[in-house]
Image 1 (cartoon, helix red, strand yellow):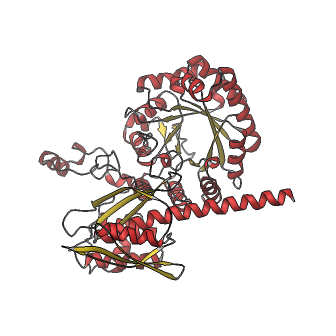
Image 2 (image 1 turned 30 degrees about the horizontal axis):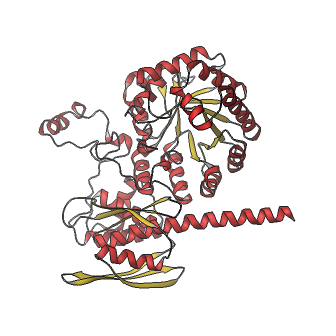
Image 3 (image 1 turned 180 degrees about the vertical axis):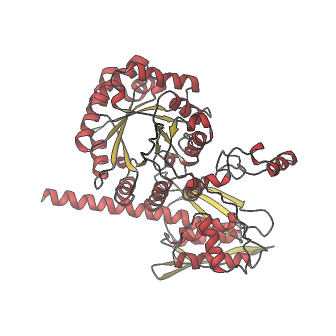
Length: 529
């Protein structure tokens, strides 16, 4: 018996969390963190991962190279401006796999042409066409974006799209770069482009919407309804300014509404959505607002008596999405200090964590320390412990000993001992408070120039015995923001861990940049010889 063919239109999901989302102040990631997120995005099943902007920094170049070599499944993309040096550097970073795409862009609106590029329409068109042609000679697949398309003259936009397709672009992306469009306007723009550009059928038509007016998801869905077959989005809606279209909102909307599900197919494993959201939150340090659609803490919570009564009698009265669909499985296991390793391992697996034996043992020992002081450990606390433990594995400096003397008329004094490559480094300092004393001691040991930009304390759960979580942001000499998070039942301990993680990220990134610079110098020296 012949198999039925799926006649629904495939919608390609292009995830730019590693590129656009990282442009949030404080959301920068290390190469290892980028790799971890990319591997999770592959498990989620996205079609394309935009891994970074290789020309922008040695760290981004290295991250894209690593992801190309180690992440299987999705097409890996690197971003480049319409400049020869950008395109050549990006093509170099993409070497090592056949499933790669070079994404190049240039501003086409009057605002960008006149205010930034200082170029005429003809000059911008020539730059776009020559850049696409150059990229096509270096990589198999090329995507082109006329930046600020929604504020570009329509006839000129059509001309740019037509000529770049002629030059070889396989994907044309229409960005609402500043989130200016309204859904009916944006949908109409996509429809008119499909009707007006004679060779548009030779390319995939994509959209990239920003959320400045809170319309990114609505605009993306309006575009899909009018013929766009690729959507560019980010996990948790992260991105510059107000962010991007949220991946989880778009895919769940298409899966939930019958009239959309009958027309379109998205090949994602939706049960990985929640885990992906949590991972991105942990590595970027950007919290998810409780009322965030799909992945927020309150997305499946009910407190109103009428709502609770309705959901208990018939779930569909107030809940249109089953939490299990996005990976929020309801568990009957209550974790206490007597639960044992197997129960903890089982619950972690249900939450989407597959730990090595060593990682599990370290997490379990930390779990016992919390469970001994509480009647039970919640999922949020368990996930915070895991995230903390996984971060420790990437640290150059590790906290070996911490003691603080404070209270009353006593001058707050901190004794801190750090471990690096087997060596123990110690400092004793005073401060205006306990945390200040600890931070002065850590800064004395890790003697690098930086500035503390933000310090934030919150509880993972309620109660005076709750697990506390601290987030700090520090700035290096170049103004780059590095984020650190730490959790503990002792807020001083959590503060030390958060500060230490942020400093570790800064030291690690500086090391990568120094090694890359040294390598370039050696290469240039050999070339001269």
